[in-house]
Length: 412
Image (cartoon, rainbow, N blue to C red):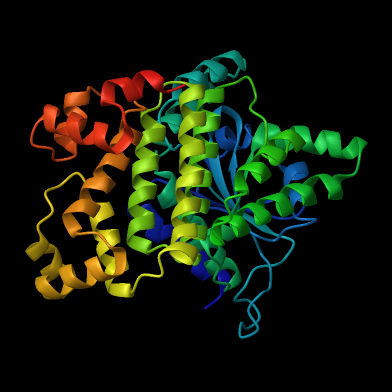
């Protein structure tokens, strides 16, 4: 099948669920093809004034697909027409000088009003302004996890190459533009290569459960390799950055031995925590907690317990159901074991009865939930299936030496 047919088919599949456009440009940023109506093309392109420079500098070092946050949090997926499949025939993969854009899209609705205000300030003709505002209403809001999947699918459609989500790159438009201007004055290859190598080292440390990762991340911030927030909508920019890291940490943790089910459940929880956050400081705390949570879990899988697959599966099951009633018989049946066998094997390997282990896990989860001041202690007790707040408080004091209230008051 010719590439044009494949990209058209891919675009048609996406259009079933989203009003998401596919664009093809050559190396000089000349538009070659688009699934977007010609009358609507002006609006998204006017927010990509320096895209040519950003793409040119980026592809000097990379051929991986890119997710780019442009002005006012408009987002795009970008892939390049690299010949990468030895089995591909002429015409089946893209010209390596071309690149393909998927978008624009939002991952929330926080920037739409700001974009409307900017359009009014651009002194457009009444007709063009009306068309641009009309197009703005059509831009889809798509979850970040879903758009990363679409980016991988587009890359495969264009190149015939299968890659993992950890091989996607992410850039903020204004940050990238600033880095290019700086690089033109200094050494562009060193600046971009340093960021890429720092990210690769970070993901290696996650996959290996290396507890020294905190020092590496601190160094990345110091060296500027974690990116900088611009003044415009910095809350949304930081949320995007944390969401990206959650995905990368999750995939790296799976490669390090963490079960996919547990990893994806943690990903969903941290995604929700990010979207519910109210401040930069809260986001920072979520990011730090997430980073060490994944790394510690991988470290435990690789170095500490040495549990059999059956017992590790039980541990994962418990972790996923701490806020539900856990019945030994139901759990054993779900996992495909006899309850007596599972209980005996668990005690032999861990030295703990299942009830003791479940209680400790719930108390550890309680320590995390107590960091959220908006959650009443009685609600935490109820969520974690304690029969009463007093029973929760009694067990928490035995485990930590403090009551839940005292523990919360001691938090920094």
